[in-house]
Length: 252
Image (cartoon, rainbow, N blue to C red; front, side, top):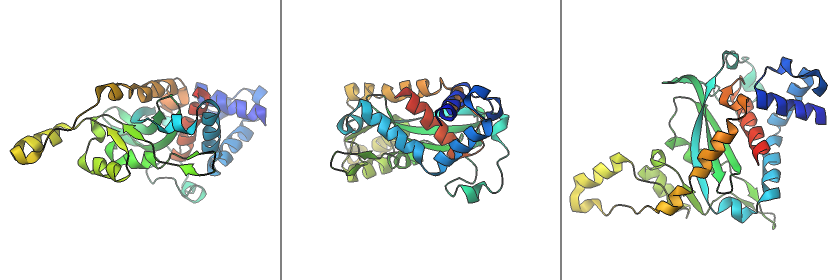
């Protein structure tokens, strides 16, 4: 079993095809089968949570959370998913998280990162999808158990760039009693100016707290050190999500 897990880690780091995993890790088809089974059972997410809690407390993980996305160019091997993949994986999106953006055929991985640099949640979308609609999908991926046995899903503070600064996002975060460190978009600023005195005062931005948002950008850079994250080779979005999570486990 350990050899197969090491084979999965090897494939994530190098981005090689499953068939090219060195034989010292065992049969390639056994490594792939284990990877797929653990993905379907949600085990990789649970392992990530356990590993995170080995080096940080729930309070440290949820005191400050930064949201951002990274783009992964899609290899030709990422195309051609089987038609029955939706039966095997009910959570698989119709487009398999693949699309064409200005950069070409690609996927986006939207992540939540703690200020300690731990990966807390991942959402996979097509490369042309926007960041703002995925804010709460990413936050809903956060599941941190506490000593009392309760599951905490709500961070104390969320930081993100202006792509997430819509009024709808701010209102929903305020309803959840989450402090925000998000600069306003140019559209919001222009709308306030057009309304004149009725537009209200500009929102204050804590520059010191906003500077801490670099934790998510640094994490994206570390995740992309794994070639299977920087260049997507997984055919299924659920498998690519597991690949990003495995990279997060290795970086924790």
